Image (cartoon, rainbow, N blue to C red; front, side, top):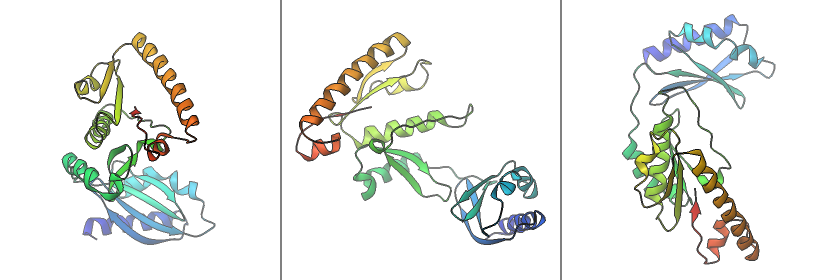
Length: 231
């Protein structure tokens, strides 16, 4: 623990005591962007009382903003590092292509690293929906590029077909020449046409899967049949 981290810990402990809350510091984790401070709480501690004081906690450690969350029986305070480390995009892509866990995924998508610096990936076939939101400059386009790059690098064009929709015509058309890209839609009329086509594809596939007595494409592949993923 650095002197700066020890100073922040002391400030948080003092703030918790000032709120009349008994908390025991359990551990500290340092990541490339944030440092997390974990405190164990008693059963009768009002969690909302701590979360509402996030601005006071930020002021106590001279941070612009801190995030306070309850994780299990702990309160975790996320503090932005004053010196942030860059996350190497190429290193993450290399990891997703060589890691045994991600190699077993059907459609691995790269999400970057978690608060403690561990690389994070998800299987797109296991996610019902993905919603990205954030203010301008927050990194939405960077995450889109990471997801598309991971998909196209880890999957062949025979395994994966992608339709892109970008009515702003700013970011996604840059990927339009990749062999996996079936179409890049830039207007609403074309989107409705493509969406109707996809609905028809879904219905036909449901009949095919039903005929094979399987529930999804993964189980269909296990029978030795071929069926590409459409994203």
